[in-house]
Each structure stands twice: as structure tokens, then as C-alpha cells.
Length: 215
Image 1 (cartoon, rainbow, N blue to C red):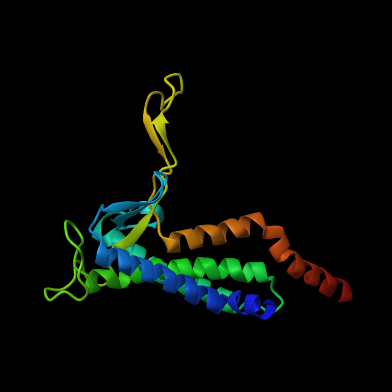
Image 2 (tube, rainbow, N blue to C red; image 1 turned 60 degrees about the vertical axis):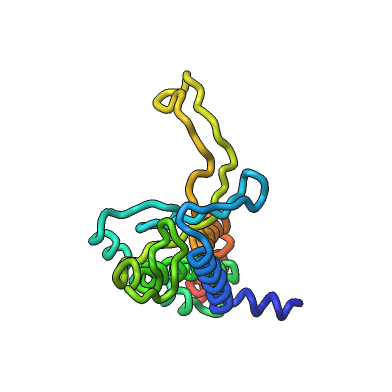
């Protein structure tokens, strides 16, 4: 059991498993559901809701075709940088740091694949089920694909109290954004870095202090 946990916690294994799960689910949704179709998973608080976004995580967008191209190129450069840092970490680096880095790296790869290839590989999903490698070509050009999202958690809905400044009386829905496995992987990786930052870097700091004392 210990050896198994050691294997699956390796950055390369985590990256492979997250990207595989992310792409499998996205392709299943893309080839089995039409845009805005949904079905409940647990009650009325967890749905698979098919949506696509042209921009960043959780449905945020980044202006126009040129913005989309710039975002795709930025993602590619960023993931190369993350991958370089992750696989250059010393063997003595904290395992939690490696896991966090692998989650962020895998999530970034997952969404990059959508942006780079999906526009070429699939037809659009508006009012229809998308087809893989359609005869007339895909719905967008290379690097202009849309990211597939599907997890929706409408946990709480209502109206803000009238006495509340700015938002008083307005309707709210929590949690409104629709996201995917890649988004979740990035978010969990970043959260782990923030929460366990001191623990992850404690060993490296201690070694640096010891080297200074020795010198």
C-alpha cells in the first residue's frame, strides 16, 4: 500500500491521471450533450451542466479573438514554465510541494488542450451533439477552441436583504460558476500551496541555514 501511494503521488503520475480524467469527461460531455443541457447528479445542488467558455477558468473571458489567441499562447508559455520548475525540483523537496505543483501543471495542460485543439477537432454544440472530426471542419481555428465546463453547484439561491448596500434586493446564486476537472485541479493545487506554504518550504529553509552555519 505504501509503495502504491508513493507511485501515484509522483508528479508525472498525478499529471497523467488528472489530464486523462479531465479530457475523458470533456470529450464525453462534448459528444453526448448539447450546449446548456444538464442533468442532476445529487438532488438540486450538483448538476452536470454543459457550457463552454472562450476565456479563463470558471467561465471568465478575455476579450475577442486576439484576446483568445493571446490567452492561449500565454497558457502554453506558462505551462512550459510550470513544468520546467516542477520537474527541476530537487529530490529532497517536500512531497506536498511536488503534488501541488503537479495539480497546477495538470490543470493547465487540461485547459490548454481544449483551447488549442477542440476548435479543430469538433463541430459546435449549439442545439446539437458535436461530432468528432466533422467533414466541414471544426467550429474554430487552431488555438481558438473553447474550454468545456460541466460541474455546477447551485448550493444557495435567494435575494440579498434590502438593507444591504449596493446589492440590496438583488438576486444571488452561490455557487454560480461552472467548472471542470482542470479548474478544480488548479484551484486545489494553489490552495495547498497557500495553506501549507511554511511546511512545504521548511526543509529547504533549514538546509539553507545549516549551509550558512557550516560556511
